[in-house]
Image 1 (cartoon, rainbow, N blue to C red):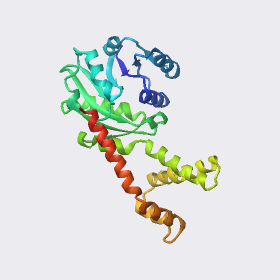
Image 2 (tube, helix red, strand yellow):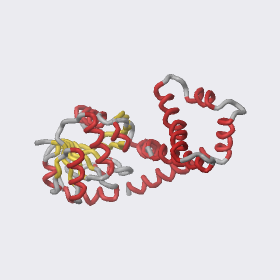
Image 3 (spheres, rainbow, N blue to C red):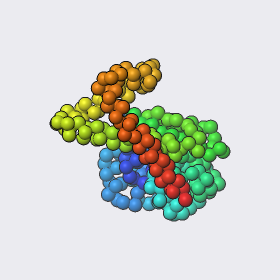
Image 4 (tube, rainbow, N blue to C red):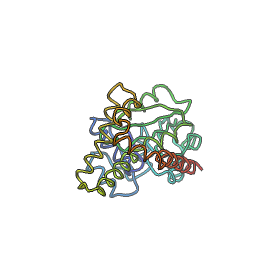
Amino acid sequence: MKATVFIGGGRITGALLAGLRLSGYKTPIIVHDRHASKLRQLRKRYDVISEPDLHRAVAQAHMLIIAVRPDGVDDLLKKIGKVHRDAIAVSLAAGIPLSNLRSRLGSRTRWARVMPSPVCRSGRGLAAVTFERNMSKAARREIISFFSHVGKVLEIPEDKFDAFTVTYSSSHGYHALAALAGAAQKLGLDQKTALTAAAHALADGIVSWREGNISLDYLLREAATPGGIAATVMAIMEERGYPGIVELGLRAGIKRAGANAK
């Protein structure tokens, strides 16, 4: 049996499995992890095949998905060794370039990098993908099709991967939601009402932009009448350096991604 094989049963694997099952994905899925408890949980929740033996898992892979932390990739690939057959390998490890992966599993393995969002568990994910130059068109289509089960897929140049990674994270939305709702609670709203108002401000407004055909500049002007309350709020946030703080955060993330590559 040739299956989709995940090496690593952590958070992103769980999110992808949830989205795949939601989409009705039927191809056999095998998961390997060194922690038996994780394998039991994933098998129970998502009806996957758990394989505690690393080499048996790899031997069954049609598509091998490396889903471990960046600092664990080098050791994992050493343990796997050479794969003596044509294979497709996909790395989900942030910051590690294809040049660090190429030929690690042998010359017959072709590599891609994919950065999927945890939001993929709902089927509304977003993933960036980039390929080795010598990967076949058929293999590229297969990888894009696989991740399309859980959301939108963008093919982008690898030199833009780190910038994408620090920008697309759903953590931005969650962090903004927590900050906005927290500030509203300090003004006297109860937690439930504060979260409802903040979620509408962030999520519903963005959905309106995505589903319409109206520019972001126009919507900003529409939502913030000059001299009004919303315009006053935005002006103070700009004055206090909100855009600059966001940029500083993204630059720090890119620096962290660069450290993963070493």
